[in-house]
Image 1: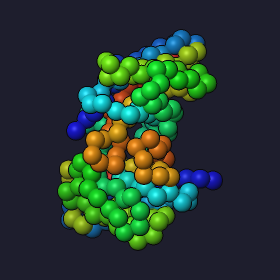
Image 2: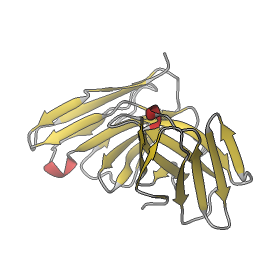
Image 3: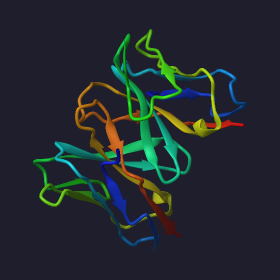
Length: 111
Length: 114
């Protein structure tokens, strides 16, 4: 069952612009994670935000979490060509030790 | 270097020919898991293991087997592969068993079953 759904499915921007991706989920969670995947490669953990946090920063990444709306957003500021990748949100699967991943946002940063 | 190593990277096989995809981690992680990734379906969990000799089914376990005889290794076995198992497979591990643990992923195995 898919818990998180990212929006948009694809995003194309110019280098230097900001990129915003959104994730909506269905059930209550105690944390949410974001991962990046370069084409065909393994996912890499970016950031985790807990349910008692509204915002978290890591370098050029800013993540927000709105538990009342069951949504999260990932903002990448001053994007670079190297940020071109797919980005996934992941939430704990209820009752089972697992993360459930959304279908991802494909980000293309044009140099 | 801390990593999750999967082999092979690419595999082409025929229907019914048993195969094993190996996964090894060098971080002394307790938790290991297999996912498959298909276009439009995202990542779906196949099996996971909380520790040695402890395994459990994920979302899509049919047609797969796993074992966890040693902490570092978690092979994925396809006893009789079928074309619908053509997919990109990822092994992942985390230090602990909590749902707030970050996962470390292998580089993936692209499997084609003809």
